[in-house]
Amino acid sequence: MTSPGSAHDPVLDQDGVRLTVEDTVATVTLANPAKRNAQSPALWRALAHAGRSLPGTVRVVVLRAEGKSFSAGLDRQAFTPEGFPGEPSFPELARLSDDALDGVIAEYQEAFTWWRRSDLVTVAAVQGHAIGAGFQLALACDLRVVAQDVQFAMRETGLGLVPDLTGTHPLVSLVGYARALEICATGRFVHAEEAERIGLANLVVPGAELDSAVRDLTAALLVAPRDAVIETKALLRGATDRSYEEQRAAERAAQARRLRDLADLGD
Image 1 (tube, rainbow, N blue to C red):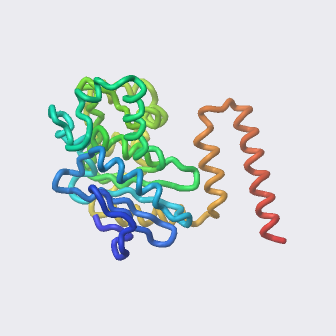
Image 2: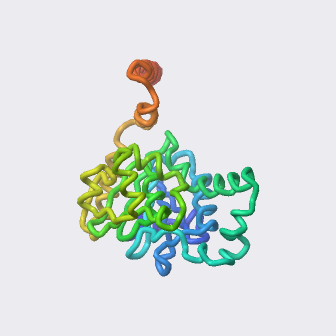
Image 3: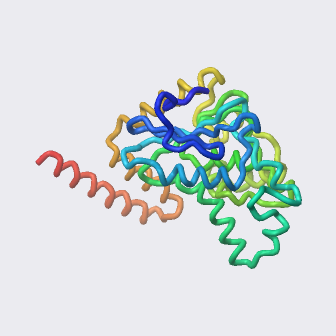
């Protein structure tokens, strides 16, 4: 894939993450294809930094990856006794106090949380393998456009771990508890046709058309006024946590804000 923002100097380019911005669209690229964009704490910090570096004008963020795989998951070096240089190894993490360990994992999760901001619409362009942490990163985005060769899998349970990078909530929201449990407990691959059928993918396209499909979707997302999209995203995100009556009230309040804003624009 080629990045829509590749003609511009990167805002950020470090530890396998590149951020470019073109007007209202930002592109975050996983840029270590030689390792199939395997993830590490350094990459997670770079992703969190990318989120903090977005100009206020950005409305849509595209997450993409170089090479044949979106992300093959956690770098296998994490499973060695020494782990990553300068980072706590798994045995060292296990010896931390409960509070300290919670803090380390919370820091890792920051790379996966900002994609849900109500002032952004985030789109993952996914090809090839999206495994474990790669699957969870795709799930962090609002929308997913996938190539026909996509292979989603949640392998953490088979390694004696759990998916802890914010992926469980969106997975259950998208496919339901029973299917989410089956996907996580078996670690099996979910391919493109099933991903679209069960709601993991908004759109499936041939790999050669992935860039153009994402550009078309991005253009469509930018048509509506920004504040209306922000209010709508917030309404939809909160819908599952509200009762029917609470959602009705939230709709009324949001519409009142929109009507007043539109009236002010007309003065």
